[in-house]
Length: 379
Image (cartoon, rainbow, N blue to C red; front, side, top):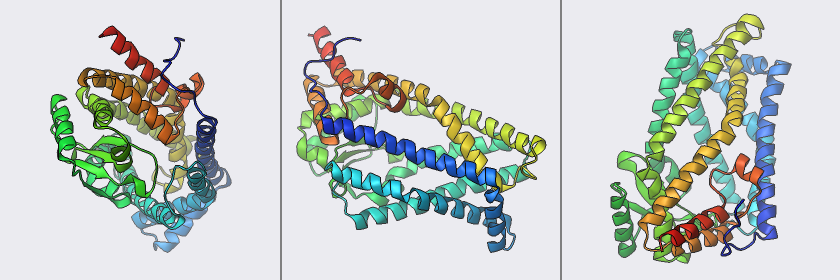
């Protein structure tokens, strides 16, 4: 391993502790969800929930599926609320949050309702195809899933994000023009540059290029606008535009398409095994098997996670190199990385296994070292 750049400060004890706790919190949350699905299947309680759903829906299949999903998600939310609240307190403990308890509860409520709506669409779609086209349901459901995924990417910036945050057009015309020119240089027509009022809830800073087609827009957190120079903001955005220049969004959709196809095939095979061999369920369309589908999805996601993270880190390195070429000097990139690490309490030098398993971005120390190496090779 090459020595890291000398301009990268060492991680503070708080940064290491915060990230360690945050990782274990995520592991515990997933473990709790998996345990719930396993218990429902082993004990047969999933069939009890199904019968209750049918009773509440007067035996109407689609409505019963919704009631089953509602009970399943409500149970999961009740069991996980303690971990969710601990996560809320964790952000305050490390002075990273401005959100009050009332606002957090309201966000949790909105998140649950939106999650229920989106899950309902997927579940109803899946079981509709299972009932109508039992032999090829997994192919039809996969195709519909891809359409929904693209549609969500288009609608999220204009429908979902404003539910949780306030956005307003950026008033700094000089900075806006600067960023629009940077976008045009990347071959992207920017539909708007918006100020993201993140400080109402968080002290962290961020920027993003969101949406597809007509909904594509640049969003800049007010915490970024208030504490970073125009050159640093330009460097941060140049990285985001690097994803556009390298077509990472389209490539990501293609990767997701392949992985989801494998997932739907595995779901079909497992359901047939559970129905035809194990006789756990009477039919493929028995929505009491939903916990089994959740376990299949979770298991496959965990299996490919290291590879997905490695691919993501590769894309991030490409986007960084694009940023190096697009800005006058890499120094604003280096300073912005260090400032973001301090402000977001990120680890600059995580252990290799932590980076391999959990990080979709290269370690900040490596990104800074790459910027310095670029500067040396082009000096």
